[in-house]
Length: 229
Ligand SMILES: Nc1ncnc2c1ncn2[C@@H]1O[C@H](COP(=O)(O)OP(=O)(O)OP(=O)(O)O)[C@@H](O)[C@H]1O
Ligand SMILES: [Mg+2]
Image (cartoon, rainbow, N blue to C red; front, side, top):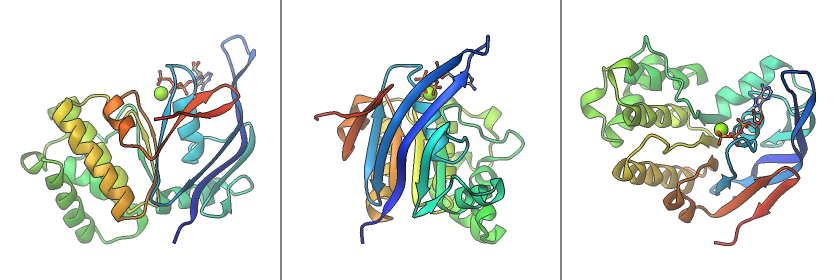
């Protein structure tokens, strides 16, 4: 069944710059993403892609407007309730990776499943399967500092999906990857979205990935423009 997983209603973001001037990054953003839908966002650097993903993933509040996750209007919720929705329903691939350096690959991936409430043992087994699936069989026990950028990015993607999210948000997920690994990651995304009914919103400059999206939106200061593919 098709359900709206993420809805943005008239969302805007205003930051204060270094001299406390109000800086409108974007305004009047409206968006609906359903399960099984892979949506791309493109825009030049500094336009607000990361800001929009952070707001959609409940890591930041919009200045105006509403963010709805599976029918929960999150504006009036406490920080704790927002965190609970994120842990349960959202997977995030950060632009910077953001792995925990003290944990090895399996532990980094398993953590998001443990936080959702699965047992430690189940989570380790699940993490191992995901990592093997992205070609990291020989790196399961390596820590981030012992790994390449592309390997870390693959771990970050496994971590984002380890809690079986309903909404997957990814910020330049193939930024550090070569062509072969980018391909692997696209396939993993498509598999998640289509087989597991996930809604995915992906900011990327990667043309190969853009070709595989169901819809591509150009982010502008005053809303999204649909890109004709
Ligand atoms: N906390 C903040 N305070 C003030 N300005 C901010 C803050 N975070 C981001 N900005 C500004 O908001 C704008 C949008 O930033 P954002 O990181 O969302 O862009 P982006 O589209 O993701 O860029 P990139 O492609 O380089 O990652 C930028 O001009 C940035 O300098
Ligand atoms: Mg960014």
